Image (cartoon, rainbow, N blue to C red; front, side):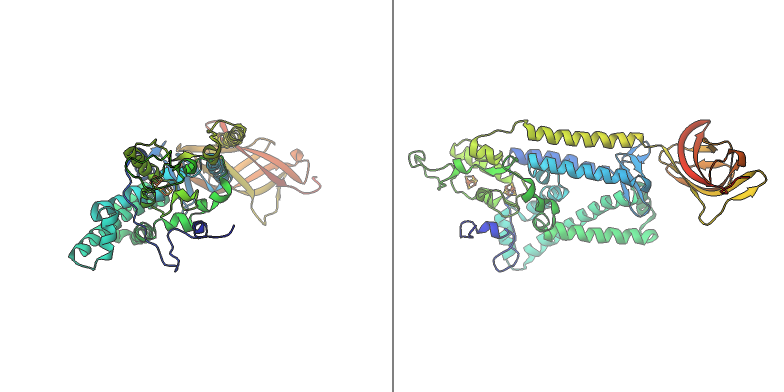
Length: 468
Ligand code: SF4
Ligand code: SF4
């Protein structure tokens, strides 16, 4: 397509000027029904984000991603590095879910759920409006010289930004080191845990940079999900869309005009949808990669439509086909097949999680050790690892042979397994020569708690080729 004056928005980014410099965006404060709904949703999400590292289910942190100690909890379910396949599968289901959701509902996630948008528009931007005022006042303040007013307002704003960034970084760190550990480190004082303080300051710096300066560029330049929109969206995807059929030809509103007679569209070219846009685009140019579906332009346009007495919805949630052919969203074959695929994946994942044993055993032969003969028995030495994925304490676990008659001698004697912990040790397995049929017997071993079999594992038992 040839790039012209009219369509050069497809070849440029709203936040970068022609000379390559940053085009600072001063969005007008949005008001309206959808903005109110988004505000309520943001309260719930922010509360959940701060609460999740401190809420516990069965004594387990609700969400934990402790990569340092390799401990992971998802919805209160502990995952060990041995469960990595489940984590990978959960991520795959998550990716498929996001893809399917995006194909149908476009970037609703960006506008309503993404933490970047929530914190930027619902927290930092609101602080900015409260201190510096709306768009025109902000532009004026930035243009004026550094007088007492500007220094005062900017200092207060930056200080509050820093405090909020510090709070976010505390919550963020709690996901990695655990909510209890964070509280412990805070109560012990910064000097007792300088490493934690350093991490907090680094995270604070990153959040401050993102929300005070980098802002909408995260969505436009950095976010991989944003980049994927071009391949995920199609004519049936729901997006914040300008109804160009109804809106064009746009023209300023004049009192007592007869727009129908003059064959004018409903867009009165008031520019309000552009002024409220936090990514600096004009939605009337069509779907653009910068649009995070924040709904600010829907509210702005609806308010204008009310003022001039036109029907609301000139900018609304709609698909390309809705605008072009009047096709409404219906539960068609495409949505049905995507839903079936997603449901199957989800059921598969849940089944794997529920089939997962509470205690996992790994019994391996000690490398480099040969079998030994003791009278009429053959003996091999093994290492064992028992992982307790629950909050139960297992006292006096027993390891016994299931497939063969024989004897297992645990070097440590008694095996106790603390909650969410692992126990490693060494054991000998002795089997009578008459019960060995091959040079590499396959053994099945059981782990018992109070006489109940709770886990099994398989291993090899080397023996002489010719048993006398
Ligand atoms: S707010 Fe509505 S009427 Fe005003 S310019 Fe945008 S689309 Fe046109
Ligand atoms: S075009 Fe509308 S929905 Fe998209 S980012 Fe701008 S204001 Fe938000």
